[in-house]
Image (cartoon, rainbow, N blue to C red; front, top):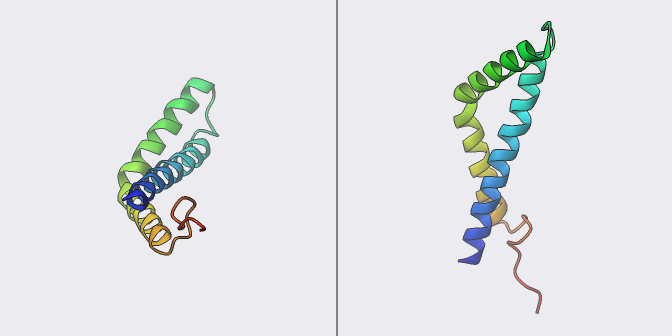
Length: 84
């Protein structure tokens, strides 16, 4: 039971980590050529939101697969059996 909970926590970490990093990169690239900070923020926010709507399912599948495989093979921290 503990391994399932740790695997789910890893899924959350992977999902929000990937989505946050990729969204920040997309938003930064989209907002680079703007005239001021406010316009850059708005452009970057819109680009990140569009990217999330378009590729959110892909990120979800990648995170779920990574967490499931990492938990099943016991490669993720917290999923290894205790040493006796």
